Length: 456
Image 1 (tube, helix red, strand yellow):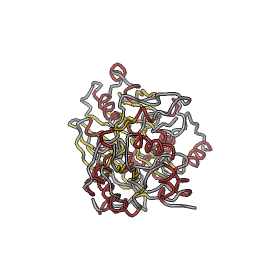
Image 2 (image 1 turned 90 degrees about the horizontal axis):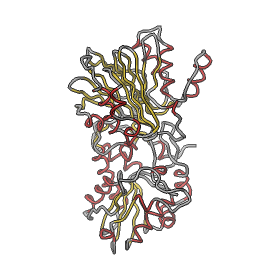
Image 3 (image 1 turned 90 degrees about the vertical axis):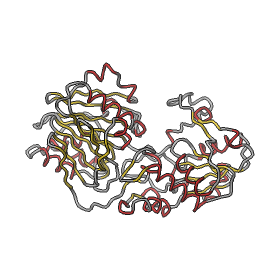
Image 4 (image 1 turned 120 degrees about the vertical axis):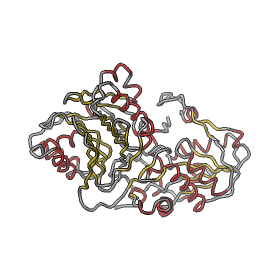
């Protein structure tokens, strides 16, 4: 069976933190977290959690599944307080209940709650050192590592303990940490993972994307900078930098696929980035055609950009059945590809078609997609991809399905087109994707390209 989601490149998680004025005594905080997490659901569907602090103690509710399946009004009504954190989880392995975040730990500072997005490249080393110092673990969550590092430095003031802990982390991370009287956000020195600060009428918000701010009627204030810690208290917002060697390397896939098109990351509209990527794709790999279509949903922006740049009409071409969630048939049955996606025959029949995808899927899926278009009567099918070929795996938390990097090693573009039954295939170059983003806001330039390059 072909599962579209399993073949996508995935990011770790989404994080959220909310700090309300202490005058709030209702479950307004929990409801705010709930709606904020719903807007981040695309970043992880395996598990969801919210931890809310009241009178110095966090009450946590979390479970396996989506936000709407884990929480309801009755559960939210039990979560009262003025500071809280939330989390949606994506994992490349089977998720166990013990690993669901936020993670809460008691300390001399009171309860500390942590939500984490990213991948700590020194996770094993940190865990080993903590075990050797007498610590024990109840999960494999990286948030537990962070919480224990903060507590380990509890002889210092909380701000100092937090900074000491964060400086020990290597890899990618966007952290949201809370205690009774403070909400803290931290972003790794490369800025690989996004984190934004927003203002509510009665408080503050930290979130992975601006789309979460929009969902809870919060005003975007700014991005948390790479290598910055932001501390929110009743007195306002304090921030300071940590670490050296702050060379910005935001993950390019935030713009290609991960983030919602209505989000803004480091000052760049995700939708504008995708439109520009489509235009660059047309410049680098344009072809004569009658219609341009996109693979829903994140391929649509690049398809529009391609169409705008070439003057070739854009059409929906492919529609997605939005009433389906997860696998609809068993592995022994026919592929669910033909159930989740369907072709608008009137857009395709008798035409030369350019189909634009955000990333290249598996050979099997690309072949099935081309077959769908052929069955609908497409005259020619030109497969275009709004990102470069994957050539290496990622160490910073991006789950790249097995086999993607082997495609670049084993196939030329001509051979790949023949393999999937397309008339031709083309990708955006590394220079093209970098140039597309640099043109928008040159001063914010700096992106990780490791997965698009070969490494020994």
